[in-house]
Image (tube, rainbow, N blue to C red):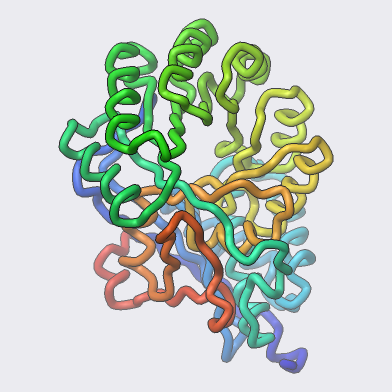
Length: 370
């Protein structure tokens, strides 16, 4: 066991890296041409923990400024205390949004450091209830042509053997419903009847549109209808939920516990999506999962697969991890130690301390933007 002086947080630093996408990508309400990862390091001397978020480079200043001041000098083994110190310090900044993303990166890095100091895998420190968890392949961007869509489905289902896939719909804020449905039909044909099919509208439909589309989705046995309307429209989510067969889900834009309490209390969703690199990190993840469990709801991990799995195996009411195409590509580019979802399941590496991921400094430096 490390001595007290070895467990003190000496410094917190951060850097941002941007990796261009192979082609312009889009969903129902947004397009992008790159993925930005902000990496936080919690330095305890001989041991350094690493965490990250997918957000604007502005998070670098937040991490190295106000958040570093909040946790510097504290004992990293008392990780929840460090999280609450950050929570108190950001009162006048506003917790929701970039502040929460920055907190998430620091919290994950602190938990990683705590596990490394103990010489144990992070999943063991957090505690496991599952040996492995289900994953689903996610991408199917609205900007893809037929060849690109086909290649991605073949990658998930054929190469990786993942029996669950998700594509984007609600192209152009719901202005191309005919193409949305044609793409769903195409993916069902490509994936076969033995593959679970999910869709994500990213809040692009009106309530009426979402109900009409949702009823059509039953023709292709779609079982997951993500953000059919804006996740801020809790009444609308509840209306769609009552009218369609697929599970209605949301939560990826939840940045704090009260957001999830409102969504769950409104009976708005069948499954709660939690994003470890947005919601406030592992510390907040488990509080959110407990609220969901109290309402007999499962949670699902939104993106950031290589850090999500470690919390997922410790969550009793857990459904699956989103193996998002952009993050599947970026995380192995910048880190060693990534997990492989072959066969449709993922498990932490119990032979490696912490989350097992090591930043490839030279490779990452080429992409550094802050």
